[in-house]
Image (cartoon, one colour):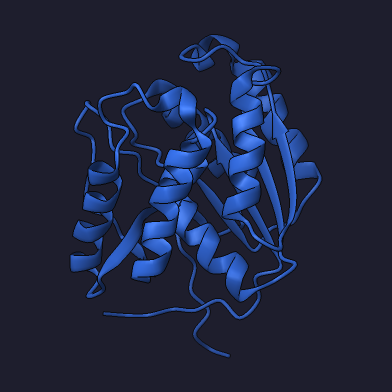
Length: 215
């Protein structure tokens, strides 16, 4: 297994179509990064949920998932499940984000995610952030769209448990969903851990990766 580290990680972009997407898909990775790099800047963008209790949940959750970070969160008001019909607004939001930051790493949905909002945002990100490392996180759902990831971030047992605890603590509006439980989140992390020779892990899809092995 090849392990590549990033010496320079000063700025991170994290985006989600919905409040809780970022935390579900990459919450453990954010915890790991922020604990290792105090003061790292994180520009977070969520396309739906603005002005509702969901926005309040997201602000509190990402603050907890990004301890010690310079977190800058923007939550828009696009209707849930309707991103294709609001393409221009979504594109404008992504372009505004891009104009304000030059990240070392981008965390976004997968381009082959079955949910149209996730998939649409993912495609916007790969065009707006052309020269950046974009890691596409995964979200378990009834569609059964989990594939074969190409990148893994191992999680310590403490981080994996903390991720699950924070998800349960900060998103009470999602507790009624049958898939939103400890077994689902920790179970997937355990499977990805097995695949990456770790106890737990989060997995990502990499659409394009440029190597520089000459330095």
